[in-house]
Length: 281
Image (cartoon, rainbow, N blue to C red):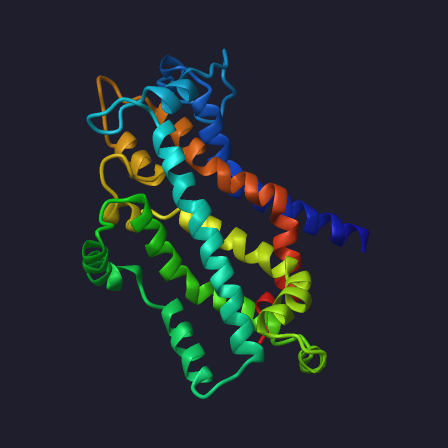
C-alpha cells in the first residue's frame, strides 16, 4: 500500500513538473540578460538575476508605434474586467433565481436558448455585435467592450446560478411568501446569504474569461482602449533592433499574473463552489 501511494505521488509530481516547465522557463528567461539567453541553456538558473526585462515590459517596451510598455493596457483591462464581471454576475444571479424558482410560460425555452448561447462561437457574433456597437456609439470604447463581455457572459452566469438555486427547497420560498416577502426580499434574505460559493465560482470564471480574451479586444477596441492581451501580441510582434526574449517573457508573465493570483488565492473556493452545486442540475 505504501509503495503504491509513493508511486502515485511520484507520478503526480512528474506530471506537475512537466506541466509547470514552460512557466519555469518563462520566469528564468525573464530574469536573464540577452547575452545569457543567447547561450542557449533555457533550463539554467540566471547567473546574475536582473529585473530589467520586467521594468522595460511594464514601462517602456514598444507595442507597435508606441513605447509606453504594458502599464496603460493593464489598467485598460482592469477598467473592462471589473464592471463586466460585476454586472454579468449580478444579472446571472437574478436570471438564475427567476428560472429556478419563479417559473413562467416559456421559461424552459428561454433557459434552453441561453444554454444554446453558451455554445455559439465568438466569431459568429463579431459582425452583428460590431453593428450594434456602432449604432449605440460605443465602437472602440471601454464601455463597448464591457457591454460585449456582459452580453456574452450572461448565458454562463445564468447557467451557474440556475443550477445552484434549483437545489434550494421550494418550501423556503413558499414560507417567505406566506410571511409577506416579495420577489426581491426573498432573493436578498434567502438566496444571497447562501450564494457565496456560486458567486465565487462565477466571478473567477468571468474574470479569467474576460481578462484572457483576445478576439473581442482586438476587434472592438481602438487606440487607448486596447486590453493587455492585444498589447502583449503587439509587443511580441514588434522588434526594435534585436529580439528581446527576456522582455517578451516578462510581458507574458505580467499579462498572466492577475489570473494566476486569483487562482492561487481563491482556487480552493472555486472547487468548493463547484462541488456545492455549480455544475448540478
